Length: 65
Image (cartoon, one colour):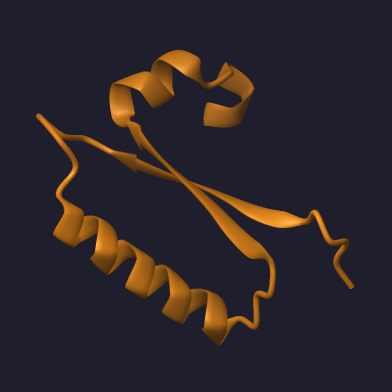
């Protein structure tokens, strides 16, 4: 089973001009909860929202392949 500090790290990469729409963010969490439930994922989802350009600039090349 999982240790107490195990979590599921999820990065939501988006392309946007301006702020991320709160309605879309809530829709994402609803979908995420549903999908994690379907696969019986019990770890806590630690979610971050990253703009595409920032993601590409700060992600090592071996992770982008």
